[in-house]
Image (spheres, rainbow, N blue to C red):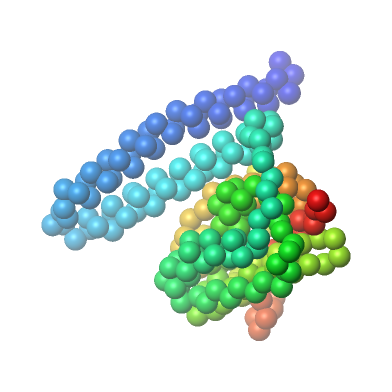
Length: 243
Ligand SMILES: Nc1ncnc2c1ncn2[C@@H]1O[C@H](COP(=O)(O)OP(=O)(O)O)[C@@H](O)[C@H]1O
Ligand SMILES: [Mg+2]
């Protein structure tokens, strides 16, 4: 067997694994729900242990979903119907999805829309909201300490729509930035509140953006090197499509 056969074999294994894991994940999640309905166990460690199990299984679920999505997009099995979407739709959805999570960490979300109302994003809205923006924002919240703010901004630059997610978090070291979009590299770190990750988010974000004819770039100042002024800005560009 040559190395490409090896690769294919390995990929098949991963996909079978993901598929089979899905069933077990479903069973665990339903069982957690059922146990919660039974009421609280008197042992003081019961509630935090249940929370831990739930977080761990959500994490496994996220990983499996990301791998499946990544493979489906890469193999062209996932088709995209691009639509004209106003940036305000993205803002409203993001606010709805992340306001509570940000408030839990006393982080303020600031939205700025400078995109003219007659200019639309040409995207597949569900994946843009739930896989692109949501991953950027959950990272921003995860790596930002309490009491800071995160800015989500849209504007036009020449023939491109630009969207940035800017945080005042711990920043990303250059050697990690270099690996950020590679699904085969380990990039995941715990968040400032101990939040866990999979390291699959950013490769997926880039893959989606490329499918929407756009791209992403990273600007970051590490906290250790810039103690006064640190944070990460993810800058997306999407072409303005003339009808
Ligand atoms: N806004 C950010 N601030 C600091 N580090 C980040 C940020 N976004 C991404 N990273 C780094 O890149 C890693 C990979 O991100 P991602 O692919 O979304 O995976 P995950 O969030 O599951 O760890 C993160 O674990 C973190 O180390
Ligand atoms: Mg992430």
